[in-house]
Amino acid sequence: MPNRNFLVCLFITLGLWGTTAKPMLGQALVPHIIQLNSAQLEQTGLRLAEEAVQLARFQQFELALSRAELATELAPNSQQTWALLGSLYIQAEELEEGIIALEQAQEIDPSNADIRFVLGRAYFQKADYGEAIDHLRAGLKLKPDSPGALFDLGNAYYKRGKFKRAIDRYEEAYELEKNLWPAINNIGLVEYEMGDVDDAIAKWREAISLDSKAAEPLLALSVALYTKGDKQQGFAMGEEALRLDSRYADIDYLDQNLWGERLLEDAKRFLATPRIQETLAQIEDLPPLSPDRVSP
Image 1 (cartoon, rainbow, N blue to C red):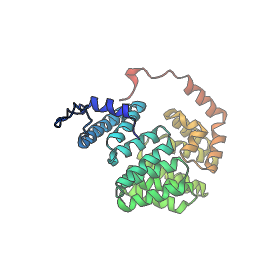
Image 2: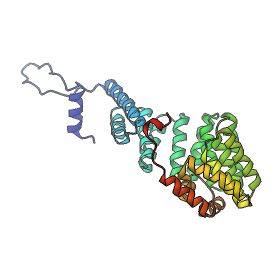
Image 3: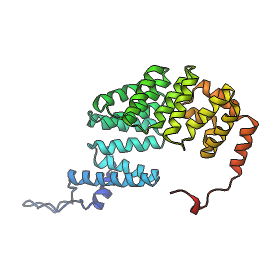
């Protein structure tokens, strides 16, 4: 049951605190009563949802979450408010709460593919890859030409060890979005785990051709080349990759980016070499960029 004091304060804020009833014959003056205007409450809820979106864009997630929660109170029949709340919970890594809110949004609007896609990503983060696959496939039946969802489905198949299906989904995603280098990169990740090292190297070269500043395929390529014996080219590419993004020196970060066991083991050996360790020390010693040197 809603908190009555909360509702009273809310209605006063919205100017909805009741009116004086017309007295009946012989009746004493009746107290003020609350007149509920559901349409106005819903519009207020949707405005709060819009504010939450703006706050989220400025990384103010705690404020955004509080507004989104209130928006669902005011507009409980709006799938937008529930979907927004679920997305913000997931952003805050509160996966269970996020999934509950998203399932409420899905119940209101079962034909909305995007809600299915977000649910699929939430279950993927929860490492429930079976549920992730089910929701992503259901969403793709409603909206088949979604490269992001196809990419996510490829990731889920990859984590389930269904390598051929993963590659097929990545290829479909790339066909729909030709600059989607992560799809090509991840085909390389799958192929490396399958032992198809030369094919993986070719895919990482292709990903780099799509985005020369993409650190991940560059580092993966450097590890593969180093492991095959081309140490000098491996070192040169690896140093460039780590200067682009030193987060890739963290094995946990590589694992989060779906590097498989075979590639992770080779990466550990590569990153532990004296030359790469020296490069990382130099990167750590670099001064932070001043405001006038930061790229827009």
